[in-house]
Length: 154
Image 1 (cartoon, helix red, strand yellow):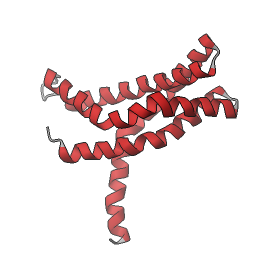
Image 2: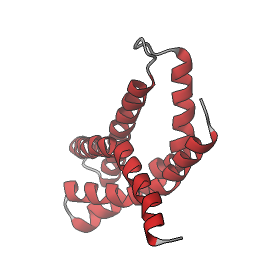
Image 3: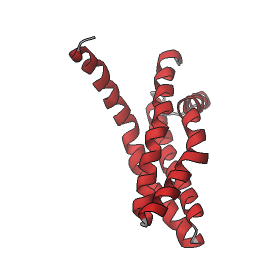
């Protein structure tokens, strides 16, 4: 396979993934900061802070993904049917399920806790923990997204 041929295959995919996930990531960063800082304010505990950051990020990220997917899936008359909602739930489970299970319950809280502890700055630690967990999260997520596009036809 030539270099130009690889570019013509890889770059459109990277652009597609970027456009799919970037707005959700921006909202997730805000959610992680708000969730982590609120948890720290109320509990003054790094474990609670890491969990608050994780769940704040999840609310922001999946809130944006669901909103975006619902907006794209509306019928021509602007209605959202029960079938549309069921398909979106199915697709979300396929796309995010494998990566999210490990991410929310293990990887992300650990990376946030680790970076908060090592860096000594709550916002910087939350951000670095979030970014490092994202690297791991997107491997199964993008794989599942591509699988879903190829094999699940609505």
